[in-house]
Each structure stands twice: as structure tokens, then as C-alpha cells.
Image (tube, rainbow, N blue to C red; front, side):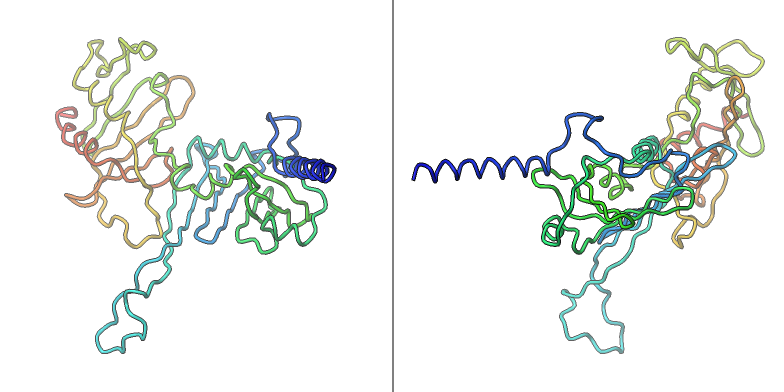
Amino acid sequence: MRQVIIYGVLLALALGGAWARWTMEPEGEGGDKVVLLAGEVEQIDSIEWKGEDGQALLTRKTDDHGAYLWVQTVKVEERKSPPTPPGEEPPLEPLAELTEKVEKKDVFKAGEKGDELLASFSPLLAIRRLDAVDPAKLAEIGLDAPKESLVVTRKGQAVTLVIGGEAYGTKDRYVRNEATGEIFLLDDQLLKSLEFAKTRLPDRDLWSLERPALASATLSDGSKSVEAVQKNPDDEAKVTWARAGSEAPDEQLATWMDKALKLKGTSYVDPEATDGPKDLQLRFRLTLTPTGKGKPETLEVLQDGAEGDYYGRSEHTRGLIKLLRAPTRDLVEDLPALVQ
């Protein structure tokens, strides 16, 4: 009996060690990790994630202002079906039980988190590569009938990774390269960034220029304008703004500029959406000119009608983005005193 117990303990330890070896993550960033997909950031065309309830498409683009990452997400949601129109026969099922799936689309420019995500795909490192896997093991790790996929396109060449289940004891995911059949264990945070791209990746900044790099600014309401010069930009305690041609600080102008440079966006407007703003009217235009050889950036602030929401667009945003209402309204209301 004692011998049986000893053999049983040894067997349990062996199985536990094998499972730990199968699922454990490496201690560091180097050594044990393997290259799943090689390539440089500049070679990436797009990254597309698809799941049961949504998808995300990240497209790397370039314009006169530089490279940027444009994102389109789709979220599938369930909602109650609308009531039966008059004159039509109601369905046999109770209305309360009827639901329909609808797709909610969002578009936006990605910020620093998007750049970090692209860097993590260049190259894409896996925690480990799995050796030969039989059909029974494929079912166990969720790769017999995967419901998610990841397509990485570099220089026009697409590689598809199908995504399986989670590793035991971690949230890391098993993936299979469709072209080679190789199976890897991948850090789940890469996939989470794609699954929750709408909340994790948007860039809500209106400028790419940092305040210390600004030399001057031109503010216009469409008919009148004022030029301002930044003084002491490298000294937070003394930094201020003055009207062009004057050395005296203008406190009113400095306060307005400080508020304007802190202005943020909330959500981007899909140019293909039917429920976007219909009557955009210019409220002011602010052009920032950097020191040195940097390019100026111009923000246009618009309002949807006389009482509607505020929106902005600039070289940095590349698209129309909704602005925080209260601080934008304050800037618009304080504008006449500055440009008189």
C-alpha cells in the first residue's frame, strides 16, 4: 500500500510539472519568448480582430502631417425588437422575449496606446510555442472550433491567427497560425487591447504640439483675429502670453490660451453616420506655430446650430471630434473681448 501511495504522489507531481511547463509564463521579456510574427512597425498595413460580439480594424495611414493609426470598431448588442406596426399580425412569441442583434460602429484616431500596440506586434512575441498537438488537445485548448481571429497584414501580406481558449491558471490565449499550423500561447493583454479598443485606444488630444514648443498663436473668429506670442515657455512659473508687438503680458489672453490648450475631445464623428451634426458653424479658429522647423497646427471649433454640441478638427485629429461642452462654451463666450 505504501508503495502505491508513493507512486501515486510521484505521478501527481509529474502531471503537475508537465501542466505547469505547458502553461507557465516566462519570468522576463527575453529568453523563453518566441517570435510568432516578425516585422517592423513601418511594414504594418492593418490589424483586424474579430470576435463573437464585435470586431476592431486598425489601419496604419500616412498624410502630410505624418503617420497615424485609424481605428474602426463594431460592437454587436442585443436589444428588444420594436413593437408590431399597426395592421400587422403580432408574432407568436411574447414581445418581451423578442430581441434583435444590432451593430454599433465607432471610428477614431488612436493615441499613444495605439502606437504601443503596434510596437508590440513588431515583432509579435509569444510566451511559448507548443509542440505537436493531437485532436483531443485541440478541443481542450479551444482550437477545434475557434470563435475569434486575428489578421495581421504587412506589406500587403495577411497572416491569420485563430484564437482558442485560455491557459489554465492564466488568461493567456492559445492561437494557431493558419498558414503554418503552429500553435502558440499569447499574452491576453494584446487581445484585450483590440477587444476593448473603443475605450483603450482613442486619442482625445487636439494637438500634437507640446506647450514648451509653441512660439506663437493666431486666434480668429472668422472675421477678426489676434496674434499672441508665448513668453518664457520653459518656465512653468513665468510662462505667459502677450499680444504680438508688445512685451507686456496680457492676463486675459493668457487665461484664454491656457484653457484652450487644455481642451479635449470626447468621441469622433463617423463621416458615414446618418445621425451626425447637420449644421456646423465656425465659432473660432486657433493656429499654433511651433519654434524651429515644426509645422503649424490649426484647430477649427464648430457648433451644430446655435444651441447644439461643439466639435473640433485639426491636422492632429484628422477627423471631426466632439468637444467637452462646458469648457468649449466658455472659450466661445470669452472670444469677442479678445479679438476686438
